[in-house]
Length: 528
Image 1 (cartoon, rainbow, N blue to C red):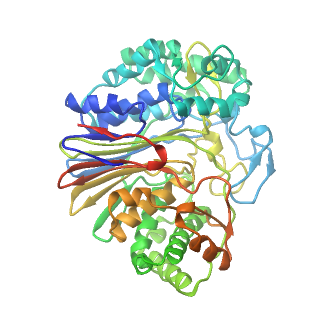
Image 2 (image 1 turned 90 degrees about the vertical axis):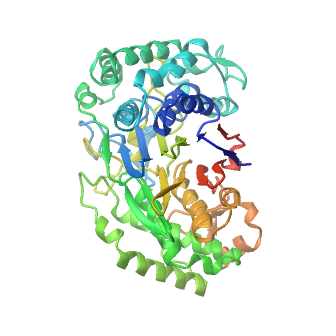
Image 3 (image 1 turned 180 degrees about the vertical axis):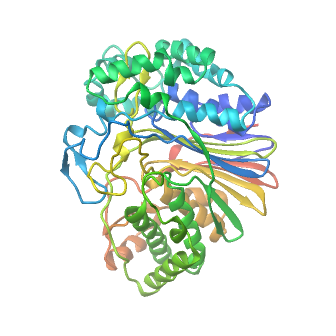
């Protein structure tokens, strides 16, 4: 169930929300809260993120002004399009690599952007120092923390991978066995590293002895991350992507996030008249699927690092393109026909999201990731530092928009968003869950903004998922009619995997801040 708070609220990781609310109570703002929670998450939920993580995106609304920070990873300069041997490919995304080398081990490691992003967020928009934001993380490393059910499950699922890397196995296994929920976890070596960063600043991580230690271990084991790659990395303040959905302004980060996809979907829901099918569950499911698929089609065909390739953003976000696509979608749904299809990407995810709103109604929406769960599964000796698998977010085949290239940023699924109404803060929203992130966020927003359903139902209502292909996933709660109808018009029902990402949101209401965890997470909202 959602909860309403008067002054401030945080929804992110149940294990870290209390620390973030404490920051708000002491006078910190929404950005201070999400950064503190994100850094602590890297200690107590290391399967999802950490300062060795490849990066993410932050969207903020501070004093009515919306901005974004891009701390996405980039490939090492030595990376090239043919560095991975593809064993299976659909010719677009979805390629698999021999020995999973782009997601497991030393060649999977790209430049870690998380710490630079958190440092820049505090510098530009926060009130507290990086050293203050790190205090809960250092305490958890040194004094220990309760192993959550999610962490215990993640270790169990990744045990075989971890055992290929002795430092990682030693860090996460208890007496050479998978830990149980409720056990005590510690990471004293990471605590020492975080203390050093608190004293010397984030550039220690990118240019100091910590960088030397990282690079030495990675290069000795066949990786390509260099000292120059680390030293040259910079997080960036960027302009958000924006669209109008009904009377709401939707903001999310630009490429290489999935923000473009999210705002396209919201605009298409408005333009395609999704509300016409509100009381017809099969057609509503069909309409949502066609909107999701249309956005994926643009992603497949056009998306890559805009600093490296030409992406026709003006066309993709134009009224002409969106209007024509919306009319096509409406026609498909009215006639009961299926749109064109492409094949699916093979992405997994180890991601977290945190939303916060403070007493001044500043909003922060932050998503960050390792890539796959526990990233590359590489731990740097004597640091407790788990490294990312950012190279898994490129297409390992050559000649494609998202192919590997030195210094290039990969396309991701993260799209933290803020929503304004009449220029005032309305909602901070985001999700974790790989390729399902933009589709789940879209469906929550479509129900809330377009269909005008209440917030609790919008976040808990059954969802569908597709990725520009012939298959769809439909949650059981949709009932029997919707899946049967979708099958009758040519869709393959895929019952493997989930249709939903885990969404978190905070809505500004007349009564206060309505904070809501996705009920699929079974978590309790915190605020004051």
